[in-house]
Length: 136
Image (cartoon, rainbow, N blue to C red):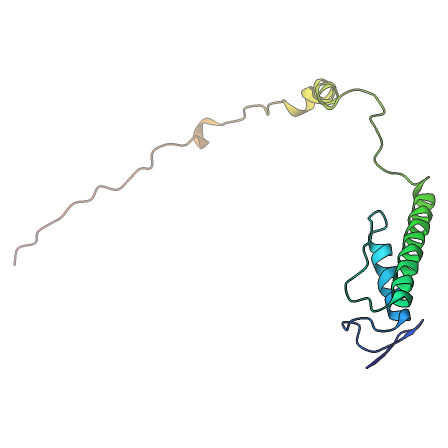
């Protein structure tokens, strides 16, 4: 199986166990990059000293790469706006109280009563109904 990406070509199955020193370096790199602050133990599948050394060199390279990436992000975000501690000022409750006092006269005006007597609601007038029996 060959996967070709714009930057690199990957030979083999990515889900298979590492076999060469380069595979062990790549596994160590990913372990070190994904968990740069943890201590890493040698996996049980390591066959000899060369693959063990490759794994640990990969771990150290991954940790360095993770630190470099984090430092780059921190440097880029240093001057960006973000959530900061309270800068002072009046509280939300105080601002709402001032707003309500300032605009209360606009919100609580009542419309004048313009009801005309003839348009008031009255009980409806119903026709008188009854049953008339007609003899045969």
